[in-house]
Length: 173
Image (cartoon, rainbow, N blue to C red; front, side, top):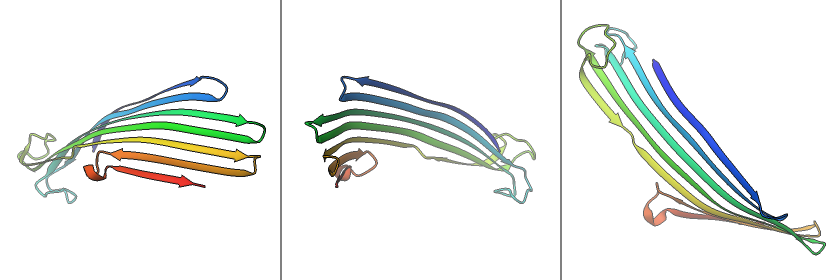
């Protein structure tokens, strides 16, 4: 098995403090790689996919971009009331492909080249996915003894049927 991977991973973070109770934060990241794999089995090997010899070449590419924005407010009112509010947005985009070429029944024994086969099978697995989300989190406390917290998040996924792409998950405590 031969494997050749090229990968880039990066991120960016920007934060802005508007005043002593309000902060904005943005984060973005990328994960991008390509992978080229070769697998060769000589003619006559017991582990060979085919007793006539076989070779596989596989090309994989993957790209993921993430983006998150947060607005956070924390404020104390009077002497006993404390509040915190977080509002945000997230976005994830994934694009991947997987292309495989399998050659069987070698023409010339012991020649390690994908061009050396009589029968070829190809498979491809493309895939794209987008997820967009918005969320909020509100916390209120009185005298540091009574607490209320309400949260909500709604996501939209491109991989679900259009009528059911949106899903909401609330909570309260």
